[in-house]
Length: 182
Image (cartoon, rainbow, N blue to C red; front, side, top):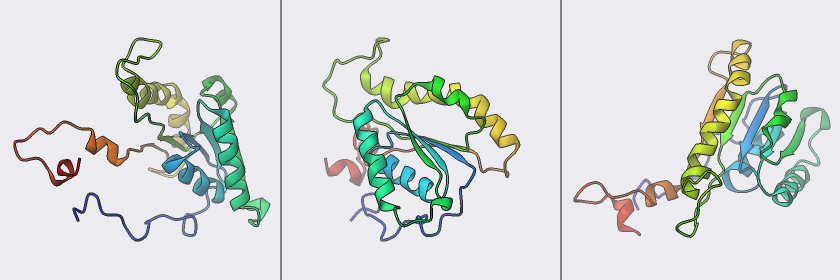
């Protein structure tokens, strides 16, 4: 099997080996499922305050219940909080720090022709432009946190799935093995 499509037997960072994140603030877009859910779960287990930004409150409430249930035996002094924000950036003004912004929310199967309220193709608007805007709006708090944190510990993480590769155009006359499987 092509190494791009193969899965690893173990993750390099797990809840068991992640250092304490107590006192740190994380934001995860798309944190109610998939990679965003797992990142939120790990960050919470390590003691971080986690904000999950999503357009669907019921999904986040369900995810929060699942995460809290998974950690019901974890000592409460080790955990911080899980919070939902309906993509309302004004709610973040109460935070004076932000250690990690996970840009993870994505749309996959969207019928052609759909547009954002600003007239962009829906995939482009949600998967790219919205995250750039979010990062831009949070840049000042990320910068302020970086000034008082250990070098290279404050970051913005852009997650992607295999769909990025599968959906990309073939640019050479001999397609890569990944394109042969679609």
